[in-house]
Image (cartoon, rainbow, N blue to C red; front, side, top):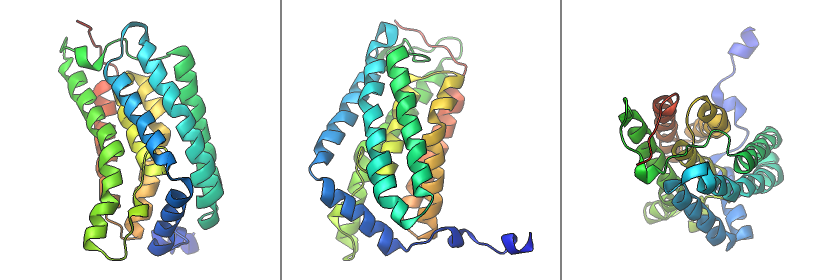
Length: 245
């Protein structure tokens, strides 16, 4: 017990910041210009989520668009690359594959998807909580699609050791994929099912945030802020009703 207590968080991160960010560069260089397609898929899913209609048709299509993205990140980012740095990468990859299957199940069944368009939600019986929760979801999704990729170019301007290839993009890298998906799910889902489907993305943001914190990377703060916002959004949206007008 004493020997276990002597471990620090740093002992569980078997690589340096330089090695990790070089990994991001390698993945970006290898798969460019697939970034353009993955960003287009994410943007299309967000548009669909914002204008979901009756019978969850567009919500189901949004889930269908992002399900293969999670499978791709599981195989390429984690199992092929991240596992070379950390033995736990394979297990995280399997979790991302499970999330892909869960999203595909939502796409096929529509289980738990809100029948209300995000653009048509109106406050009813305390439903302002829903409006706030959906607004949080939109902000998180935009953060994953736009804010996360521009962090690297900003660092390039201030740090000669940074590279444009370190930009993390939805559908290619894990962090923006989890962030964007969290936002989409806050827009699309309600009740206890929201907690179920957001568990893996939120767990990864916690693990990744801790990793980046140990590596003294500025992105850690962004991940913790997104995680806190997502938890607040889930709390607001669970058990609440919406109304289509």
